[in-house]
Amino acid sequence: MRFSLVLIDDEESIREGISMALEAEYDIRAFAAAEDALDSIRTGPPDLVLLDIGLPGMNGIEALRMIRQMHPEILVIMITAYEDVNTVIAAMKLGAHDYVVKPIIMDGLEVTIRNALESVRLRKEVRSLQEKFLQENIPCFIAESHEIQGVMELIAQVALSPDTPILILGETGTGKELIAGAIHYRSPNFKGPFVTVNCAAIPRDLVESELFGYEKGAFSGAGPAGKRGLIEEADQGTLFLDEVGDLSAQAQAKLLRFLESGEFYRVGSTAKRTIRTRIVSATNRDLDAMMQEGSFRKDLYFRLGVITVEVPSLNERTGDILPLANTFLVMFSDKFRKNFTAISAEARAALKGHAWAGNVRELRNVIERGVLIGKGPELSMEDLGIRETPRHCEAERTEAAARPVIPPEGVDLDELEREFERRYIEEALRMAEGNESRAARLLRMNHHTFRYRKKKVSWPPQS
Image (cartoon, rainbow, N blue to C red; front, side):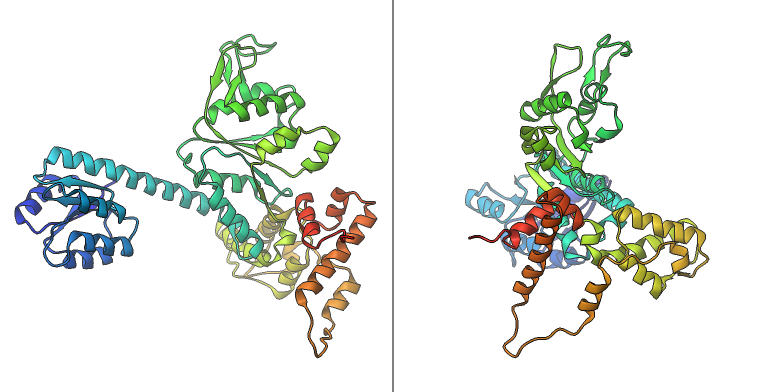
């Protein structure tokens, strides 16, 4: 990776000396005046600027302020003829990365530059990994709906911490693993491994040894050299525990200990081990109900869910159905070398009206099948292989289609919406005999979303 530098100094000998010393390793542009340099920086921002404080005309402090306004990501190293503490402090407060004092010792300057550019290299590496991850998984991150935009904003915030546990809740097929990956690649742990574990796919009697590893002879069938566990494999990175609700009671207890102390023992070992990793977990099960039944530990739940991310189902983010479908259409048309360019009006209506029990994964599979067997250039109802399955009964459709009556004094639309939700929540609870988990399923939402909506509409009414 070759970096670009801009040098601004009014002394010709300094410009020539620094340029000759650095040009073999860096692309360097040198200027005698800040005004000329700013025009160049505006059109072609460099990675780093070497900026003399005592310039004629626009001085270094003013030039620093302008550079920070134009491109705040550019690193600036100030050059001063003498160690003027007050001026240097002012420059650092404005965002200067470092400073050097004249007369310049080239060996020291080169070390200062290399140290500064290491942070630039790291930032570019982070951006490259993030872009690669998003490019590979972009269909699941289509975020036109308000519901999923809120999730993406939360992800960007919580990713900043390197070790805070995060619990992702949502139905099967909503993209929980992709969200865990997005958290990893946006976090300070991005250079470490991203290790995924499907807890439901590992036999219960092997979960402990798979997660924490084992020593030679720990149990019948244990390998002669022992084995590192998946937690150790995720050291300095992220461990994603999918379907965490399927962990056995013994594995839950050991995981809780690790979350609280960062310490664990391999199976069959008395040697304590310590690593640092972030635990991101996910489940589509109702952990609240499992805690009430006693099959999931409350203390583990609260440790795993320091931050909780609730992923809406596709039926809750209907504004993303057609954008997702169009994205999948282009993706699979390219993959199968077909010429699909559009989705028919009838097929679009079916996609919007279909109840997506399998969420984004089901939609992706439907479009993949349609492109594979269809002839194009338009994806038809026959290609999709589904029939329109409305989310509402015909009576509700008729009512929704009817022209509303608004009295002369107007209506409180927010209150009408709350009343509408309140009636359905009340009816779902009645049908479920008060069981919130069953009521949530009747309204096609997860338990946490149901409880949030119930609280929002103030149900039950306060006496």
